[in-house]
Amino acid sequence: MTLLVQNLHMSDRVIPLVDLRNTARAVQLPTTPVVPNGLLADALGRPLRDLRISVTDRCNFRCSYCMPKEVFDKDHVYLPHASLLSFEEITRLAKIFLAHGVRKIRLTGGEPLLRKNIEVLIGQLARLRTVDGQAPDITLTTNGSLLARKARALKDAGLQRVTVSLDGLDDSVFRSMNDVDFPVQQVLQGIEAARTAGLGPIKVNMVVKRSTNAREILPMARHFRGSGAVLRFIEYMDVGSTNGWRMDEVLPSAEVVRLIQSEMPLVPLEATASGETAQRWGYADANGRFDPALGEIGVISSVTQAFCRDCNRARLSTEGKLYLCLFASQGHDLRGLLRSGADDADLASALAGIWGARSDRYSELRNSLAGAPAPRVEMSYIGG
Ligand code: SAM
Ligand code: SF4
Ligand code: SF4
Image (cartoon, rainbow, N blue to C red; front, side):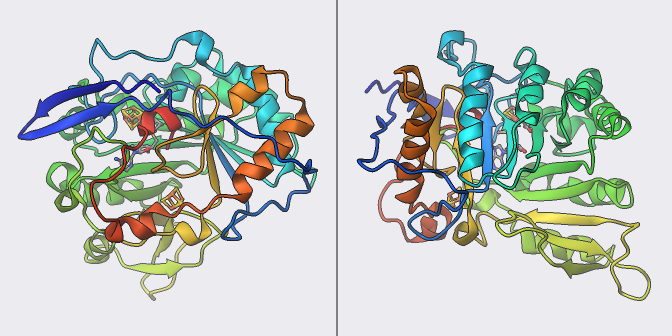
């Protein structure tokens, strides 16, 4: 196990980067083979429905809540290309996840559009089927910087939807959030190109940090109301170990909803799918009823209202480790098993063993955990 620890001073805080990439657990094959039937459940009875695949640990942004530039600087060592899962390896694993019940595949990163020929992978994934014989729901989360150029090719390859991260409309606020001076206009053009290409309904993710971009909440709500895109406000989370997270920087979703309500009336909407991360609120018409033409917002309250009970998400890291929770310290080395010559039946049995033993529920336990938190893997490595 290699632990790389850098101590860095940012403001008055020390931010250690603990490189957990080499600390995976070797995967054991269960003694009895498990034939997948789409009904896999974990130790708390939660099914496996959503697979998030990180296709690169690199990014052209340095959002302070994710890849602070003081840590992810020119000396940061990214994974070498040979460590990354190839498209064929990703597709083979995805097929086994689908056999165990996954219905939705989200490509993420790092910045997924930086992975060369990503549309080739999308094409391969689009040909897979769920246990019910349906095409999987394939989506991608991007910072939008390359979307204007790539939207059409992504759609042609079989991508259905995109989620674009956008933390504000004010150019100077946005440039300070991405911390590489990237202009907001280019992301807005990316959203427009995605809409024109038919990659909808588009979701827009805004991470809210109280002192940095809370004043962008209302302008963002006004801009996307009635646009067909669903704006989602995400509570700033204590993911990874480098972002210097503090509770007083979290703006609870309830406050976001109250603020928007004060200008644009909202009504609560039902969840569309079990395990959905966002609580939905619809814009109301003059009679106080949901008006679909005005659309909806979502709030993702992973800090103030944990939703582990329904968590059906697995995360496959860039180099093929399976993480059972966004806040995990260790992953399970599926790539090791894959490259050791395991056949599909072995991989399916191994996955059943790992998911069957899962009991993670970090967000529910966050406030009752004693002592210093265990180091957590970075979000840019396992994907959001
Ligand atoms: N680079 C792509 C992007 O930004 O959309 C995909 C990867 S990014 C890790 C996935 C999502 O995680 C983004 O919507 C981002 O805003 C969110 N995210 C990253 N760090 C976060 C944090 N500390 N708290 C809440 N959300 C975070
Ligand atoms: Fe890059 Fe996305 Fe992380 Fe921002 S949130 S640094 S865009 S990976
Ligand atoms: Fe799922 Fe872990 Fe998040 Fe809970 S904390 S919702 S178990 S990823």
